Image (cartoon, rainbow, N blue to C red; front, top):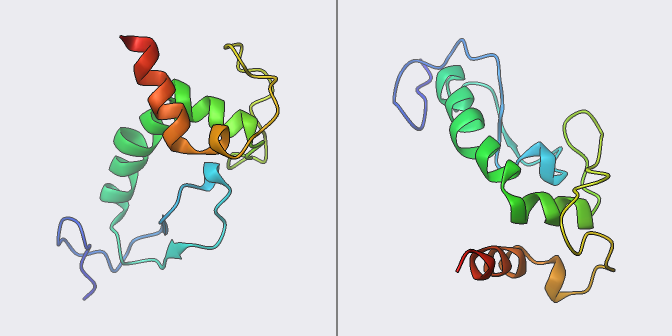
Length: 107
């Protein structure tokens, strides 16, 4: 019997694979095979962890800047926030830049 690495419950009938890096960051290959994570935990992490992270302002800006496609192959065309049409420079393309910018604007 396979057991979920998060909750320890039986995961031998799991139908989904766990993406180590979200698909919305362009990941198509870094995945854990079926049965490593149960469907319940996979869905929980997708809804409660991954989705809020991907919808946060700095990450949406980063995804738009880098033209990263989501699961459906679409990019964020118009974020509507400031600095969305600037060229991608090394520092401005890093998550650290957007996260620090996000928190500096909150203060």
